[in-house]
Image (tube, rainbow, N blue to C red; front, side, top):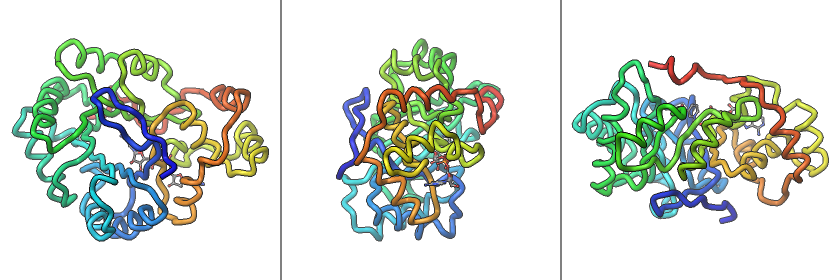
Length: 276
Ligand code: NAD
């Protein structure tokens, strides 16, 4: 396959471009993930809270693709944070819904600092990894002050931090902290979830015209060249194919800088300290 892999700090590697299923209707997930696998995606990003792990699992089972060629991520929801029993129970149920014997990557979905259980939860993740049923462990929506606590109070450095990241919200402090500690960045909402007119901005449309590509392909290319792991979502097969067709061109330094210059702290979600 043409998708590069990113080396993680635990010896495993991950396909840099995948397919995400946030807000994919559980009844349609099997069909949509089947389309994504046929288009060529081999990395799938789901979560317990999306309610569609079963559909992802059925598409995987029906595809006949060897398990080792796939990369599957799921996430622990906030109300399952806590001691080992709570975390392992939630993990077992996710695995069961997915119909898998292991997942490649398991994430704490949000720090949920009001609960103040993410350090304890991370210690449970460390134990879970030892069972071999999860290859890599990471976090999501963690800011530097959350990561600092994990680094100070636990043994394993997260393999990834999956954060909201797109041209309007690049989280440079979190990205720099992660880079310093060998934590790979996964960019969620890589296209801004369609909530901003990113695909109409001249910095992006000009690059698209120059390369004969679409604005979405330019934004995906910007992420890839910044080193992010990403998994844009679409229900439409033509867009899945479009978003995957990004390995035959490269943005030059000026084009990259113009897009990076779009930062304006425009987040689409709540602040991670405020998500319970
Ligand atoms: P996204 O930025 O990938 O945007 C998806 C939307 O962009 C689509 O619904 C569609 O409207 C539009 N789109 C997609 N391809 C397009 C194209 N080629 N041209 C024009 N428009 C296009 O947003 P997302 O789905 O929220 O993020 C990607 C994945 O990240 C999710 O599916 C999920 O797996 C993950 N995610 C994680 C968290 C978290 O808290 N960890 C939060 C949100 C999303």
